[in-house]
Amino acid sequence: MINARTNASQLAARFRRRAEKLGGALKEGLRNVVVQVDRYQVENLRGSNAAESGDYPVPSRTGHLLGTHFWDVKSETLAVVGNTAEYAVDIHEGLGSSAPHGRRPFLDDAAEATDAVEIMAVEVRKEVLV
Image (tube, rainbow, N blue to C red):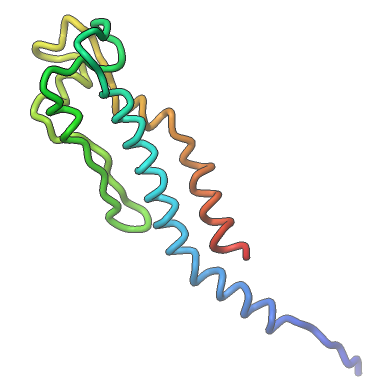
């Protein structure tokens, strides 16, 4: 009979602790992602009357479009970034009175400018791989 010594129970306990932290790390990482997307949205919207037609920043008369941006983390796997201005879709998609200026997809561009995978990885490494 072989008398073997292992640290299997210690390893199992370590992985259980990491798994317990994963949900919180995912939610925090997702929060960091949507905050960054929202920052880029604001950057795209922050404008003046001098902005070129169809370009960024979106020209602003009242600041209403900029003031109606939002983000919300619903769970560790669902978050929303958006804009509630009644004309936000028209500007984003180049519809209605915004048609002559073309699409200015400020939310799509904000999402594409955000490195969501890296932001999530940083949070997961910080919380789970300790």
